[in-house]
Amino acid sequence: MAAIVISGKELAKSVYADLKQRTAAVQKGAGRAPCLAVVLVGENPASKVYVSSKAKRAHKLGIDTVDLSLPASTSNEELQAKLRELSADGSVDGILLQLPLPDGLDEFSALLCIAPEKDVDGLHPYNQGLLLRGADTFAPCTPKGCIELVKSARAALGQNSSLSGLHAVVLGRSILVGKPAAALLLAENCTVTQCHSRTKDLAEVCRGADILVAAVGRPNFVRGDWVKPGSIVIDVGINRLDDGSLAGDVCYDEAQSTAAAITPVPGGVGPMTIAMLMANTVRAAEVAVR
Ligand code: NAP
Image 1 (cartoon, rainbow, N blue to C red):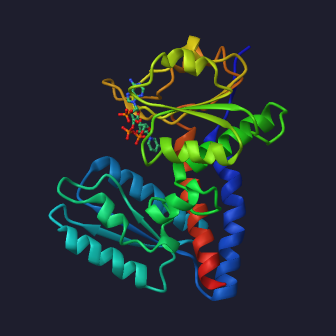
Image 2 (image 1 turned 90 degrees about the horizontal axis):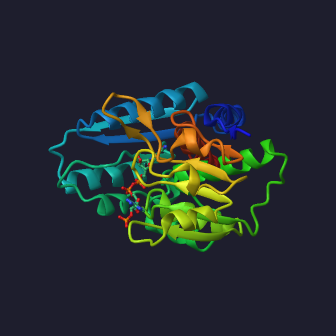
């Protein structure tokens, strides 16, 4: 039987319905809308597209944005000063530093200049430490979206929302996706296996996964016979092929005949990443105006 397709676009709509109400409540209670500062350095075309779609979505929800475009020639000191300025600005609730930064700029030092309570991307080491402790904090948006997609898949399959005891395999160990995805799945009481480029017998490890999260950055890397029958497959990968089309990290045509549920690319994890950024921003504003 073909897998259920878990649409991130549809799931994001329900997140937005809730956020619209919460944004209106902040506006009513505090006399101002939640505000997201979006910082873009340089001219990376993909980053420009991402930043513009995040700002557009924010406006649709009634969230204000401060758009800060800095030239690629910006120095580390100048970038850090801007981020400190935004961190100290009482009218700004969330700060998004669009990554990657141009060559020569130090990502980690820049992230350290974002106030943890405004770190809506969940990349400040303070929030990452809290995440590892299993605390309720700002989690990075992509892995947070993955958990929502897994829960939505279970609901669509008529299963309960608990992930307790399930074996989750995460392919990838980046600080942006793989590591926080593993931490979030662990917090859900999954038994987690984290894989990377040195993992042996990768296909065999994947075959044991009740939940498979692929964040490798290689098109069609996960083959159909790596997928456990009845499992939930979350494809984080966004890979541009030579013909201009997009492919995920999972060979969708093969995996969808084995998995019980699978996310498409595009239209799966991507829309949920933006939805989780909006959710983190509204949450930051709710705390700030309390
Ligand atoms: P990344 O920083 O390049 O990390 C890739 C990870 O995959 C690394 O941990 C690497 O292992 C592992 N890997 C590479 N080749 C492998 C192999 N042959 N076998 C096993 N593991 C291998 O990438 P990322 O930032 O995590 O992103 C991963 C993918 O997700 C990309 O396609 C990216 O575009 C996409 N993405 C999508 C969204 C979204 O919103 N949908 C958001 C972020 C990223 P090592 O650590 O050993 O090198």
